[in-house]
Length: 267
Ligand SMILES: NC(=O)c1ccc[n+]([C@@H]2O[C@H](COP(=O)([O-])OP(=O)(O)OC[C@H]3O[C@@H](n4cnc5c(N)ncnc54)[C@H](OP(=O)(O)O)[C@@H]3O)[C@@H](O)[C@H]2O)c1
Image (cartoon, rainbow, N blue to C red; front, side, top):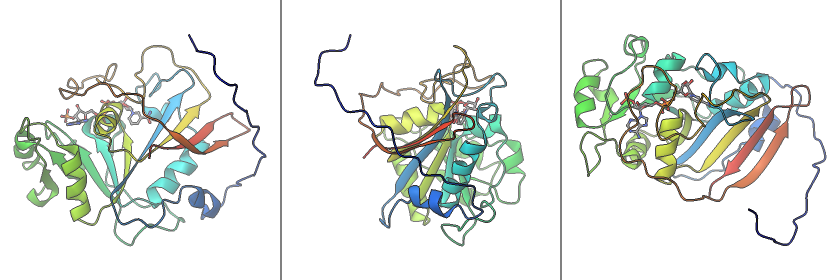
């Protein structure tokens, strides 16, 4: 039950329209990260009103829409590397990434894809592609991954406690050593839980889709990939996170659908 506190003001924001713009200049400015030289990790997720991270087909594509897509593209354009758990790459059929057309890119290098995987199992469509992903993994996973992608794409970042677990902080440092400092995590819930538990997430962009999906799908933060078919159990040892303050940078509203698009800063 809530304790009695001084009531807070509520605000009805004055609308500013952000019409579709091929270069998305205004939208990109809202997501500007400044010019810091350190590693910056932004996560971008979509959730239903009742907290579901995927739709009936187990894919996030069935719960997102055009408003989410606009931001998704802007965030990719601003990133050096997209970071995903291997489960997301497998379920969502990730292939090598292209920079979004017509948007000013963060750099002139191709947009990299980095997989986090304890097992080192790289989805076949990625292993067979022209530009295999980087794979952040532990020692056992590195042996598996090196049979699927060139050795220089395997970044062994083993945890000090268990050499087969992934040290995510070391993984981000390994990406930064390659000049990949603007990191965009696109999923999934298991990886986001681990990144939050390690306090590695600078900001969380969350689209709230105007629909409900019931109790089956997990939240966007999950200790295990509950409901995701065929997945291995979550990596061991992800602790519960204490309440983490989040500061709202902005909240956008698509009036035709009701979709809400929020940018939350975690530090
Ligand atoms: N709502 C959204 O925005 C959103 C975004 C992305 C995905 N999704 C949905 O989420 C579902 C997949 O969920 P998920 O939780 O399985 O996704 P996930 O986090 O991408 O995948 C879990 C797998 O990734 C690897 N992994 C993740 N964290 C790791 C860590 N700390 N250390 C080592 N390996 C780690 C492991 O791969 P190995 O098994 O190879 O060891 C693990 O089995 C799909 O249905 C997808 O559509 C939703």
